[in-house]
Length: 194
Image 1 (cartoon, helix red, strand yellow):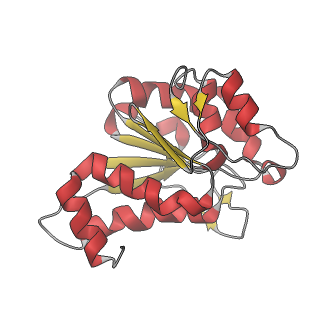
Image 2 (tube, helix red, strand yellow):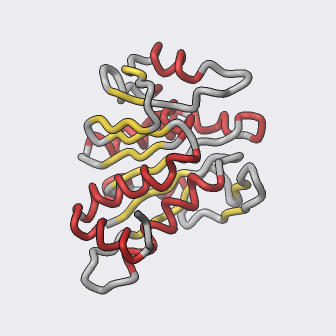
């Protein structure tokens, strides 16, 4: 299985790393189905908010959406370039992967491009509530979502969380959706997650 991890400039480090690490643990035991994470973005090098620099595995223009079982979109900081996540190309990619039956795992404001793609109308979702300059929850509601007052929301193959504190839970929810509850629980045990 493959998860496509889209990284915008200024992405939130923990949200991106949680997906790569937890999915990476599927390689720890040979009887667990392997989940590969492939990174992409709009640039040859993408800098996170807190200093990571990532060279994407595949250029955005070379993507074949049908090759992916899920799309993960970490949130990020608008002051550090995250606005590029609202590009029509990402909205189209989210639509394609979702329409073919794939999962969308979003973190923080990463749900907003998915909402702009029209994929959260009448669905439960959450986003980061503490931005100083943006009304993320208001925007999500205007885009048709049923905004919950919870840390995590899951509704019909779309996972969202309020911020980096929910990163592990979102990653485990996606992992369980991809490899099943039994395998997910075994990996959680091996990672000493209680």
